[in-house]
Length: 260
Image (cartoon, rainbow, N blue to C red):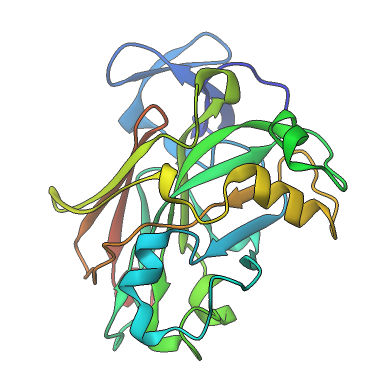
């Protein structure tokens, strides 16, 4: 990661472009053109490498699910991998499979690794952070084999993880552990929290992960979600926001749109 500006990736006029904020409602493409933000297809803001996602990394969310859990505070961080097919951009559509009883969003701070990290100590960990994005990582609880020991169907479904709208350089974020985040479903606030409530903060996660695997530029860590997850249905507009990072919009659609 080399960019030092807040930026997005979009498809426009048959090509993929880096885009930057212009005036409200408009983007400036890297070639200088200014376009309406609704005239483009938004992609994940960066070319993503390995996606490492955290479960149960907010104390209030652990409490929210306490009756269902088999983990304790002494357990190692709960981490799982996601493939590139899981990713969507801003204004994308996420499928809710027919017959599902409980599908919920997860508003998360996404941490982008900027340079190789191998056996990094926590005091040096933030040097390896290039920047941040908003993530919305959907889960289908029906498919959980044992609450928050997530299986592949729950956490690696096509189009289940929305990233964007912006990549925000680390230099723009004074303290990533003091950011308010929230989710709105059809305009109503259903989830609120703060990154100050992470069980394992960003330096701890980088130290833990880099102890046994080499993190590379472009790898993304999804840092978990606070309490307040609720079921979403076809037609719902879900907005996940993190102060200073962005406002990520997503719509829930049914099987019919995908020919199923």
